[in-house]
Image (cartoon, rainbow, N blue to C red; front, side, top):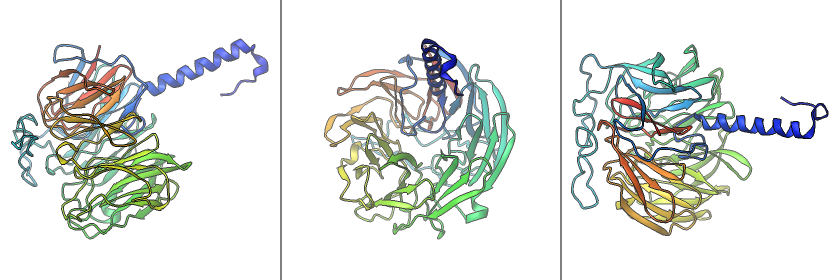
Length: 472
């Protein structure tokens, strides 16, 4: 709202401006609208006074039992929390594919056995949850469930995750969710369904070997989803933008790749960035990093070199990170490439800033994070390495956080790095040029895949059995 300045003394006008700015800050601080936070890059400056220590009996505001485990991370807007989940399992469900053995640790031995009750291989019971795929809405003050809506049916074990993995996204009025089966649904905050869209019915089967796991992205009134696949289908990979309010198709573009066998598959989520004055989608997978115009999906630039040996089994899980003029592209551990944002066409060499080739310490699943000056990457074994964001020079690491196998992504908030392992234990590390572990905080020891949310001095952590609100 605008007020005629002539109606107010300058002091009053200034006070109104300060109050208006404060209201914006409060609104921003109270929101974690999508996976990896308000910027989608794993950072936030909007919340302060976060706890560094907690336990099942310390600094827990509330905990709420979940119907089943999931890789879907919580998102928050104001007094609402949203997350995907399977329903509670009543009878045993079929297991699609047996989980692989834990990977070797840095000493060449098998994993530390800290990846969940099954030693890092998933729930010891074999439970994957029920067959209903649900969107839950919880009260942030108490953790109590306000409503649940079934938006899809059908759940299966998908190489250590299930069919509920994508995280929702919200704008404070509507919330959008996607299932591992390709069903997209939109609800308002009262739980009324506004529209539904089925990717499989419209564009063919989803053919990623490990199942669909990308989260939707909201940008400029569009809901964007990526489908990068090829292992189990001959259908092309593509990006799709829907009108967020109506569900109508705005644009769909195919994303070309010459990747072989499993290498077209990606479980990444697009990043949104303003590059050369244009809002772009940054997409990683299928052996390439690409930039696309938000307006029409057109490819603006492309970088190769991500799979230099043209490996046939080079699926990519961690998502790209864009921060302060740099684009970081993790792959299947190595190479991890860093590009200077900008350029058109093939930027494989023209914009390449540095590459990381130490396989022992590179991430296979967790997405890296940067504060602009430093670049932090967590390996799947819980080792943390810090590099110079612009040059790739080692600042410290690898350092053992002591939390064991880790698939959640690190978050930078309140001057600290929060990293949650597969047992739900979270390491808290000081941001800066030297490694300083501030604490390790255990909860219930259950199979945990989710990245926490951070709002107003509170941390919302989803483990395999419960949702916790952690605060001082």
